[in-house]
Length: 492
Ligand code: SF4
Image (cartoon, rainbow, N blue to C red):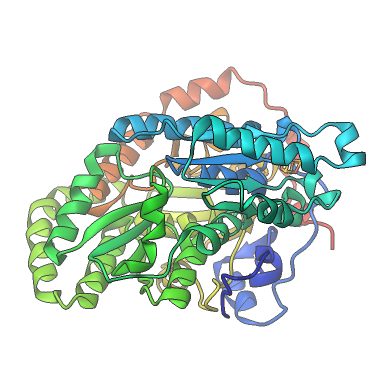
């Protein structure tokens, strides 16, 4: 499948990739159904308890760019979540010592009368005012359900302003109602970057685009990444968290693109490869030892430094593996349930299975059977081929009421999730839980060792979760908690 970066609008993940937001079965079943055209039908969810939307996702991502501004064309409520994400990027920029004075997040605050008469003039005023006040290097104009439903033409506004504002002004077609998969917003954001920001390459550089949610600040991971890339003669550019517009402009000149999460980065990685020939490294993602070694070896192969990489890996192994093996002995056989986006979910299944743990169930916020190049996600294929057990698998977009029912049945030794609002529910059931909020939690040998130790501590010290559960009254009845998986199925 080809990505055309000149397109005005891209389709949702449901329409482009056949991604789904519901499934109840097991690993092998989703493997079989996703390999056959039309077998994995998406169903409609008429109720959503706790989810996000693609508008917030897209504009939250773009908020990571330190010298860009966001203009959200919608009611102020739509801007709430993304603005929260934006302020966490302020902290990230400060931690990295990067300037963020030109960043702004503004909103047109559409009203009821705007939905009748439109508010294009107001949108133009807000864009111009945002430019004049904050002097950003680019402005992203994000859609919302309301601006989308009344057909506000963002592209025309941007064209009209081209003579007035001398920086890229990029419409982001991320209306929330277009997709039940918030990750569609990643694609809308990266499409806007590919179309309006990235420039054709002038030269080849030794940079590696690292597409992630953060920029590797936790646990000094940036130093570990630097150590790896130094061996290969490469340098990191972290995108888009805490990046600059200039760094994004030169993304087309990089030696390669890598990522910590295929769900996040596949559109950008494939787009850069197809439009500008930047190789998108299709390794396992660098969580856990298998993922880290696969990425390191594939990068080494790309730049013809396979011997250097093997020498480096052997040195690291000699130092870390003896300690790691000791913790593995204690984790062996411990039972886990995982709930995350599909890419991170399969990556963490692999990591826990590396520890010798038994993954009993995985809940994914949605499921991609393929990416934009038509390939199956590597993390999924690896688990399909290598998982020692056929764990049960469900897809629900952060619907707590569903995975509470599943948690109650599975009763794992530990619940591992990636969104903070979900771990608290496992704790209320008396199940120790860990929120893997940082994508670099198990990066490389050092990170994997630390992650294994943390999991072990959580599993051993479970008295907090147990005590909490004795003092919490759940909003779910016994009747609900004992319903079978069929009752969780969604309307056709
Ligand atoms: S109204 Fe639409 S764009 Fe706004 S927050 Fe809700 S789903 Fe997202």
